[in-house]
Image (cartoon, rainbow, N blue to C red; front, side, top):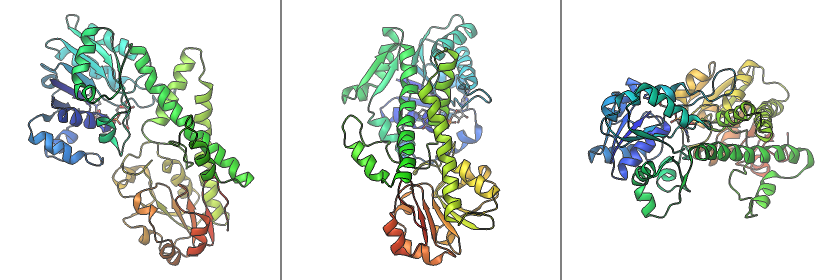
Length: 438
Ligand code: NAD
């Protein structure tokens, strides 16, 4: 089967590579010539574990190629995926559909025979019908169907998520499109992964509802953590005790510095906006957005507290700035709120992140990038663990404390304990939802 993938970002590239590994012939298209140049040279423009090897394997097998020429990729393709960005539209929280509609229009004029135009990007309910309208207007003779196929992969574990999904959701309007989509996902059907066929609107809504629910779960435990700090409870025990209940589950129940990343912040905003547009306010989601902002701000207070009330002139080592480990994605990471606040308050900030520097350099002006945690903490007044990369999970805390001017630790991922910190010689320790000292 011939597939065109429009957009080779985190979702498009992973999906395109995985579809080629299913045995399909895939052409990945991007309008960014620098990306295509890198891909053609065999380099992966993003950091995603395992992606380089799987890409090389399928390029070598002749099933996967890259192009800046959308029309050539679309010519003869039976399924054309739109996997372009849908960021928050400036000013009103709505998902910006400019890229989706531009891609739809380009596809329309390039169609040469029947194809299914599949939206993989996360888009508000009603968008697939809008895509149909745009395509038919641009090419009234086009023979095609639309399908909604939202993506649920997680950055950092994207290949496994794509190859072994909890479910695949496919929204269609007729059997012809359903048959094409069944062929696309045939290897997953054969291995009994749940493939759910719905109407267009339900498929679109599933994606937003799922992401808003997960964001709610994280925010719920973050709010409980704040109350734990006031009452003497330990949120780690609380979340374990909650998570053992099969109705609740233990995933997305770890207290931290607030959710971030390329999906939850923009998708909760877009869902809230959708509710307003339909005079059906999404009150829970709106509260989640507000609480998450407060969670991030609370982290700043915590860091100031362990610096004895002021960060002005203090040296602070930040370990990890990406929104989670195993990705280089900095979009809406809590670090983008916390670090500038520290810099603005006069702190001298050093940052270490195994993959975040390339994207982070422009986003975090005024900080000093280092490549090693032990170098970063030298003579520092506070160390802040912001992202739980493996190398920060296994720090020699004694070595860290010994190097610091005043050993104070803000463990915003609850990796260590008060006991660990005390034993290592830290004079101050703060974490999330647990007792502090210092
Ligand atoms: P991204 O910004 O990493 O990639 C989008 C790519 O599309 C860019 O490379 C851009 O140059 C390209 N592009 C834009 N318009 C184009 C056009 N007309 N023709 C060709 N290329 C074009 O975005 P992403 O993180 O991959 O997200 C894509 C979509 O998938 C979004 O809607 C997002 O919400 C959704 N999604 C993302 C994730 C994730 O973890 N990143 C997970 C699930 C769903």
